[in-house]
Length: 327
Image 1 (cartoon, rainbow, N blue to C red):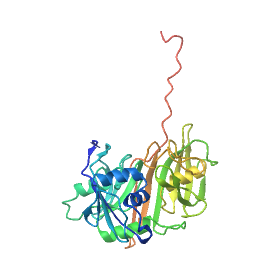
Image 2 (image 1 turned 180 degrees about the vertical axis):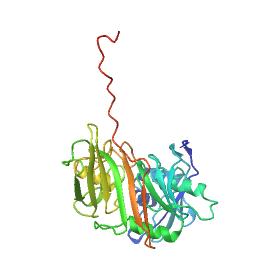
Image 3 (image 1 turned 135 degrees about the horizontal axis):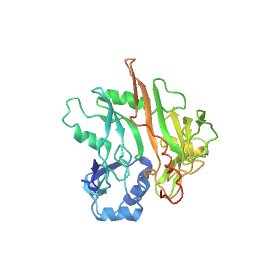
Image 4 (image 1 turned 30 degrees about the vertical axis):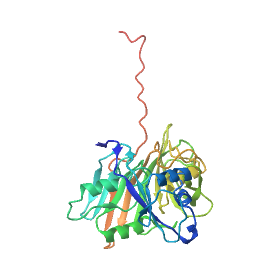
């Protein structure tokens, strides 16, 4: 099932002016807060009557005061076509684990609002007496595999804290393993060998976004353990166990090791980002493969993606013929 491309109903983005931002012009405030658009673009939105300050619709620029409440009423925009179906790996009436397809965003962002896992779950379960299962963590738009959702707010709070573990130490009661295809031959490992990598991830300047997550010498500590599963002339297949949940951690760590994900348009060997690329662009293959969670009651949930990511099949070579093929 594919959700066809089409317009959504628009959205309202709300902001509040902090003390350090007081005195700024509205257009300058928005250009700094939301650098995806320059100041001239925000002036055009002001002139179109899309922005309110403290409930009053504006048409001209002006200075802001501390505590001012701003609302940008973004008009409807066209969302791309995305996959609209998935398999359910586990559902106990509270926890639901789905097998997310490539190309489907989890949460509204990056030009997507209605074409997301969250919105689809809200529509499909709006009459469910048990409640709506909502995602408790993110997967990249083109990352496939296990996405954990929960119906009860208390369960979501517990899982969110567990899955976003913020240190490089092993997380008790939570094990996350991914599979990925890497550029071939870059890892100095034999099949079955493992490598533990600790590398910080931080924000770096980006010409299109203002900043982007990259490998860095400090900032947020992160830890990944790579195990080479198979080699192939076209790619290396690895399992990656992560002990922290930093943004784009696997893509960044593999690139930092000199072995970017095969087809990754964003991260370069060393872990820096291409200035012309964006995080939501596809081309790589990464799968949330296995997950183990120890519940608060002591029971253990173990789930695995139904179809593990694997190496591409070798091309079939026809048997050698004799002569010109005639009897």
